[in-house]
Amino acid sequence: MGKRRIVLYGNSVIIGAFDCSLRQSSRYEVLSLPPSQEDDLAALAPDVVLFDLEASRPEAAFGMLERHPGLMLIGVGPDINLVKIWSGRQLRELSTSDLLQVIDAELERSPRL
Image 1 (cartoon, helix red, strand yellow):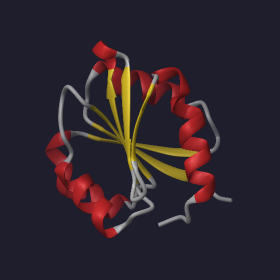
Image 2 (tube, one colour; image 1 turned 180 degrees about the vertical axis):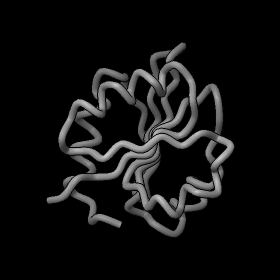
Image 3 (tube, one colour; image 1 turned 90 degrees about the vertical axis):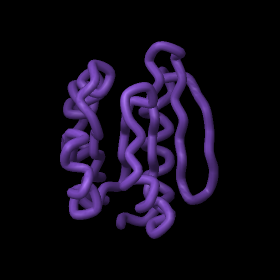
């Protein structure tokens, strides 16, 4: 299986921390997208969009979720140690320590967009 594309939406400190961690894995192609370029999100064809729950709500990504149920949206709330995951199947809450395991498991089951 090829690399899965993860778009980090926003420029908060927590997104920067995930950027460093995710880029260490050869399984992912990691792209950063500032909120000012929200219109470019669909063109990036992500498998995952990760964003800070407290900083922004990527409306473009939520719109993509309706058209591409395999897309995974991950909202991270660093102040409350919470991660919310939206996909075409469900919404879940989990601790941040389990995030990478969930990404791997979900991407293995979902076809590439």
